[in-house]
Amino acid sequence: MDRPLEDFSLIETLRYEPDAGFIRLRLHLARLQRSARRLGFSAPKSVLSKLEDAVAGASAPLRVRLTLDREGQAAVTTAAFASLPPETIWRVRIAVTRLDSTDKLLRVKTTRRSVYEAARAEYGPDEADEVLLLNEKGEVCEGTITSVFLEDSPDALRTPPISSGLLAGVLRTELICQRKARIGRIRPEDLQDRTLYVGNSLRGLIRAQLIWN
Image (cartoon, rainbow, N blue to C red; front, side, top):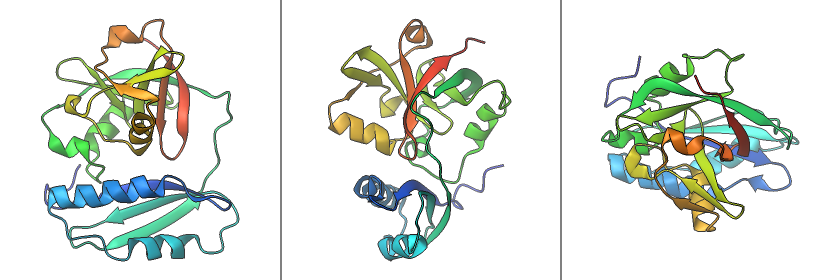
């Protein structure tokens, strides 16, 4: 179950590469600060120094999890990270679980994750690598851990608007800013015979194959 409404933390999940440092660090920190202001959290304290301390001496890629509580206190944990092979294709399915497009907390990344956990639990690891969620209007929103991207042309991806009820993903933000993705509503029928990707800042874009239920 989710924690009480007032008892949750913000999350940022980053990738650290020994040669490149933190990937998309500026965008992650900007989202964290924006989310803290929006929710009335205290300003983040010593976040950058805690991130740097957590990866000091690292000689291999890391998955870095940063949490921020209501008082602005940050905590950082790390784990080994291995990139997916370039030819990877994830099997994705659509959940019965629905998102509420009016829920403003869906727009920020927090420890309140019961709706995503419920969607993921609908399929076993042998049935799907990721599960997509629709909102109450039947629009495609996001995956349980990824943003959704549909290929409109060889040079342009489409990704759902925040107003559909979804997280402002860091990878999604970067692709929009680079004009590699544009915002547009997506319905399940749009996914037929189209190239689909899912992705996040940790893993980048991943080719996906939708398996119809």
